[in-house]
Image 1: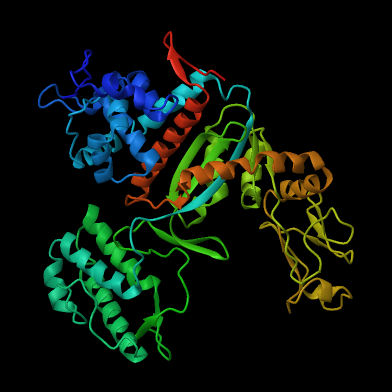
Image 2 (image 1 turned 90 degrees about the vertical axis):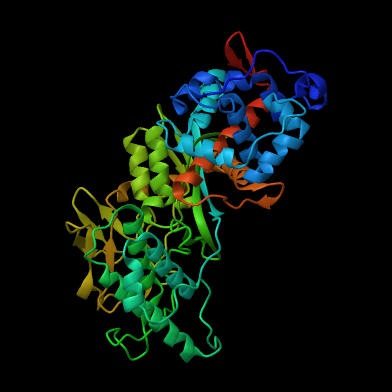
Length: 525
């Protein structure tokens, strides 16, 4: 059953005895005075539909603890210790000085209850309600978007470790798999989690081991292919099939049919980095910055720093890219907005979405790359480059040769390039120049023209877009230390991000004098 806070204070009530020691204007002091207004019991009643059993920790107390945990980036054990020993936490949550606190597993219990409910992000929703009531965003039409890579909670596994781990997972989760492993898998003793003992400095020995493990994995997948599976069992077998193919290639002189394999000399574009957390991915924020983990996307109001939307996705995949998620943020907004973003957001699809919705794009255009250094690009606002006539459906090259745009948005110059005097400045292809146009090419070209011709656009970008980097820094770090995610899977880490931005937004509002008077949330400034 749901527990509720008592109306009267206990004899050793922390707030009454040592509340004066907690700094005014801090998160602790705010929660001490307003946690029940922020997180009323009625908003959590559905988590405890039964009126029987031992009362839970009051919702206002536990929601406050989850906010403090996420804000201070503490583990469950560290959080339980803080609630038991730290006077500030006792004041913030209304505990008595001699309260022994709770077991760390209680936090797992509450997060699970929230995750499986109809409103899994109600803590974030509660803070958003406060933001709306204060009116801090009223009349503010700017939004800035950015993303960052957050390190996952597991160690990156090499190919051999992943293969062994994936087969052991099938053994645990697929009914009847143990018998098939004993029958078809001969390359390793899969009852042991450790790596085989070989001469790791010998490339031939390593390739022989990789071949044996891959062949075992393929044989096991084939042996269980006709088995009716669902849930965890189905996922375990699919993961094994994925791991067996993502990091290997046929050995030199082999086509793979002879069972000879080696570790591939490249990284798979959507590589699973660990069988412990299959959602974690290998990616890069820039060509020089390679990481493993998840991608956290954020939209914020740049003048106030209030986060208006957020999402954690896997770190790879077109559907998880910066512009793809920004389109989701765009769809969630009411009213016209000016969207500020760096060149990663300068795609035709996002610009099209912004234009179709009647918003404004203050986004730095993607840089154009010419096939020949210093040569012609596809742009048309300079004198010498290609000109696109959408109405006529043609593209004209710098040598005044005009070609039609095909149904697939391609203009092919082909053999016409052979005798062209400008070919050395245009293409190195033996088959001639080919121009591929995006469906919203008109918006991309207009964006490049506007960026060159409108200094006020560049000034708005320089003024407001960098502000979101400060928000990203607050989300991804604490005390100068880069945060590392504590949970497995996209869903749990997305819930963490929702709590994190809720805590940061609340801290932002507290700094502006947030209070609750006459049944309404107001700001002093």
